[in-house]
Image 1: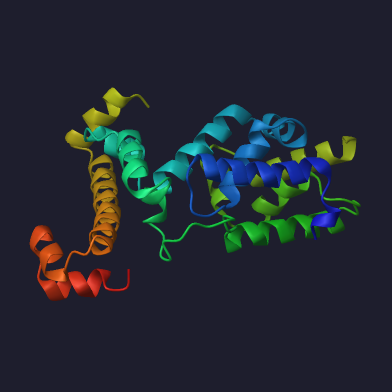
Image 2: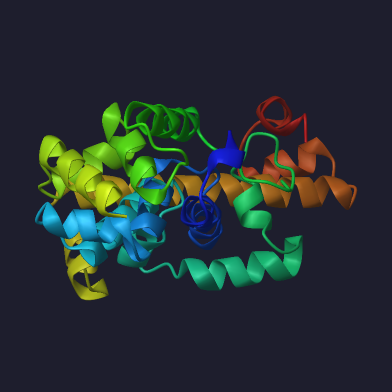
Length: 180
Length: 68
């Protein structure tokens, strides 16, 4: 499937991996993809603006949602006076780098690749279907966004909370794809 | 959200912030327990010693961490 991805779509998927690593997420879901799409350039930020959303704010809300969904919630711990970064520094020194994050996973082992959630995989498949539907040859970043709003997903819920009208957003993306 | 407003939230009367803090504390405690128990076992501590420090029974400690 990935051979049909354009450069910007590949960059977005790779960017989602970087976001997940930075936010210390155990898995990669549509919200991570949304962060890179919204923070990038091209079809998605333009479509978001057309639909009346601020791309930077969408990205910030997605990051916030990722952090709040993490059981080891640094902001919540800071609120009761615990500096998670300081704890992590100590556990890295005593138990090895990344030990605190690995301790939360069921297998407890170091993982080479973060897995994509089934929701994220589904959105990539739907992106392909959107490209087929629109008779586009390759999958571009705009198709990725269409894929994640086609069915219910954490990213779509986030966009709706941000005030997006899904139908309006879809038209905006299709418009961007046509002018690309 | 600034840290000040978060602190106000968690120690104040907003259940959502308070519960979020409780969940994070529990998660942190669980992970530290996993790491400490694993290390203690590696250093040759018995389940009895570990259980005594954790304030649980030997059986409970072994049941929870026996596979590590």
